[in-house]
Length: 424
Image (cartoon, rainbow, N blue to C red; front, side, top):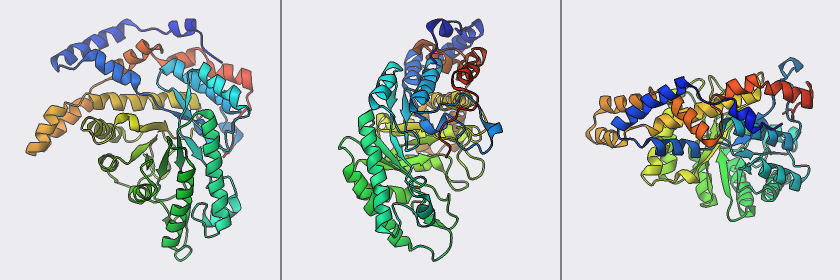
């Protein structure tokens, strides 16, 4: 389904929003912040939606099904089109293969163009779907069996070929390779085989593509993972070439890890590929961004803006994607919440007085530096995010519009109460 201009126009702003905006405008004037420039920066920030997030992908029982879920890639594009109409915050989709194989490339590309959507990085799933019985025990790209490694390489090359047809410019690789018991795997050999496999994939990529190498300290292995941290990922990226960089998944780090420092270190080396935005309480990464650690997300954006402004790595070279699994809730509701939370964290980080912060850092004034960050973080920027959305053609309150328009009910009517996407 697609919303009409009348639908969107009926959810315009109100007096409370105008008053809130005027208060912030006055404050910005005192701080000598260019209000309109700030709004344009927020408008320009776009976040890709993964094709795997548009249904209750890991729901194990029928009672957890939302109903009206997209059944193929085209219907997933339609759902992202709805999100874009409401939020003006997502202009692209990141496709997982083979979960979302295009049935007709021309039809899919035409639909994406009609919805003003692009194809972000492609995602291979070599660790999960190609040959589960063999991969589950000894891995894919780092498997001791050369034949299995070649099969996993061929899968990634197929994903690249599909991405070329869709107009994508990058490949995200994550491997579940590792072991569960001491002595099960040879650490150096599995790492060496993984590098060899990645090199073949890297060389197969078009010259204008980038390879984004993800890392996780665990899952599904409980003893060792071949690419467990940003150091191993960056080492492999450097050995592959300048178009290989490190993907940071916010939900998968060991307890008490300083993720913002990792981000700064990667930018220092021009090695940051992009993000999978999510959050976690324990060991999974399926929770909405900022739902558990909102200050951490703000600090990450603070480092990103600092790195861009200081010339370490350009903002445009970084990819942004949500990566969460909405198992028991309406995926579109959760995605609207995620887009809002990420944008709020970014907007707050834009408010940091960098000149004063640099002075405090130079002079070792830790308490004042903390106050500068807290001043930005505690500012309620929701009116600014709302105004940016309205000026871009979205609605003032996307969740309110989604519920009042009963969009999920209409999707259930169109697709059926039992429709669902690929169950992984």
